[in-house]
Amino acid sequence: MKLECRNLSKIFREGQRETQALTDISFSTSEGEFLCILGPSGCGKSTLLKIIAGLSDPTSGEVIYSGNGKTGPRNSMVFQEHSVFPWMNVIENVAFGLEMRGISKKERYASSLEFLKRVGLDQYAYRNPHELSVGMRQRIAIARAFVNNPEILLMDEPFGALDAQMRFILQTELLRIWKDTKKTVIFVTHDIDEAILLGDRVIVMTSVPGRIKADMQVGIDRPRSIQAESTQEFLDLRMTIWNLIRKEVESSITGDNESS
Amino acid sequence: MKAPDAQWVYKWLLPCTILVGILIVWEVAGRIGLLNPLFFPVPSLIFKEFYLMVRDGEIQANLSITLLRIFAGFLIGAISGLVIGLWMGTSEKVRILLDPVISATYPIPKLAIFPLLMVIFGIGELSKIMAIAIGCFFIVVLNTMMGVRNINKVYFEVAKNYGASRSKVFSRVVIPASLPMIFNGIRIALGMSLIIVVGVEFLSANHGIGAMIWYSWQTFDIEKLYVGIFICAILGIIFTVILKLLEKRIIPWMGHMAHGNER
Image 1 (cartoon, rainbow over the protein chains, first blue to last red):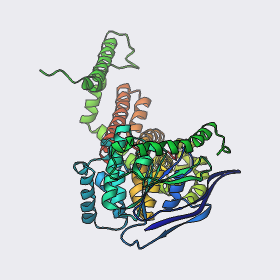
Image 2: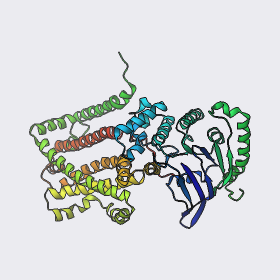
Image 3: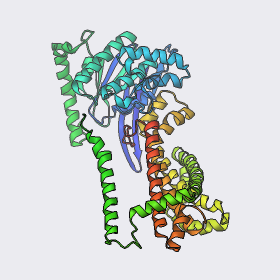
């Protein structure tokens, strides 16, 4: 399945005030690609992902899904945090998408349990999320999305609330699952290292109003692990991206929106 | 021997000791003439009176009629409050329509409309039950509506993204996510129904705990008056304990939910 965004713009209106969040975003993904969208905080990258997910309408432009998708839903999203339902146990949460699509309890529990095994949470299947750590809860959110078997996975800074070690463990885990399933992933982050470590391709966004500043391929060999972060290729790319993004971060700190 | 659990000491032993201590000081002070027995009869006399009233069935008769009024009124008020609160919480149209009416009538003290209720429903049981029902209704309706409106937006986004139908959003997100606030409303409403039942029984009842307290004041039966107050206190405690237990069973994740609409 292919996704194409054509000239997406988003303006938020609040009373008389208008805020331009996104300006003229166009890009497309290729089959099985891991695409990272990188930008400073508040650059509208989460808004972009919500438009792609259909949770928000663009002010202008369109999102086109094309291809021979027929098995599952078009997209499933992994949200930032607190998105796991505290009133459902772990397996009910993971099976939520399947339940909504009317799949029988036996069937949806079987596939959820299988996936929970893959993320090492099968022994917690009938526990309540609040008994688990933040990292485990994000694993539940990831499992919920993958089990739903979408054509495209959308991830909105899913590891933002985790400490560095846990983040790295979950990144590696995500890469392993992605390799097995070969899904197209769009991953939003403000972390340069995360974008390079995970992505086949990185789109760098400007600060508000968000535009595409650069679109680059990541040539680092897979499978990647923490060693990848010390290769020359990684370091060069990180410096290139940092130079691109530094001005954007500075302008988002000073609130000067025109400097980009 | 195992040392007593520190939590157990603070939670049970200490409060009980203080309570018993107060009773002993009260008893002693009364016996040596420091307290006027006309206003402050000693605890042993009150307990004796309590025993006599239980033996004669006086307490059982009054308590059962009071409990009946509370539960009838509470059920009518809480159920209608729950339904309308959920409706107002989920539908902006209904909220815009009903919010002004509820905001305008909510501050009226429920006892102030009791005479009107007697005019409408007569001086029998119905007016008393309706007074309690109205008191409970307002508390439950407002808490339920706030509960629904305070649900974190991300839960709705998850439901929408994963293809939940309207009815599934309601049953799998709206109801469970607003349960903590609904329970909060129910707890306050039960306390409120205790206040109202005593109030209306003061005013117009021949039986019930409130009527019992009122008669003991008129006949200056001071021990009986204390027994009545004591029963009200016990009722309040029992309601709280039962609700706490229910809460632990039904919403074990209470306090572990993302709040507000910050995103």
